[in-house]
Picture 1 (cartoon, helix red, strand yellow):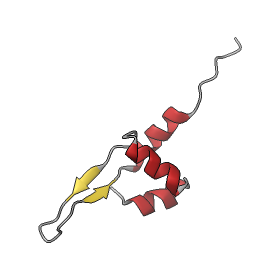
Picture 2 (tube, rainbow, N blue to C red):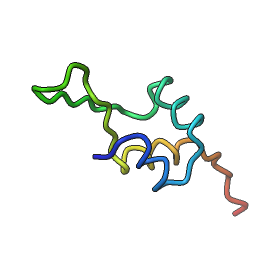
Picture 3 (spheres, rainbow, N blue to C red):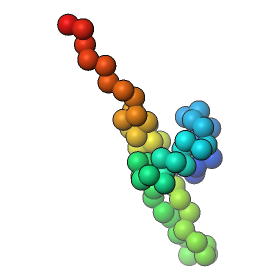
Picture 4 (cartoon, rainbow, N blue to C red):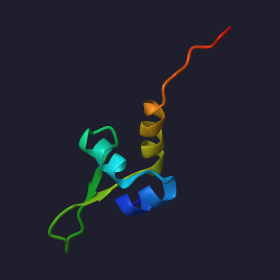
Length: 64
């Protein structure tokens, strides 16, 4: 699991698009909380982000 900044860098997607998809709940968020942290930290799986981005691609019918 990675943080938002690392996911954005590795996948090369715009930051605003990434957060828009998170707000629309199209990218699953996993919250981690360590005993010493006051607030949970949002973490993401790259495979789930890739799957969400593939859903955005329009499908074209085959010419056959």
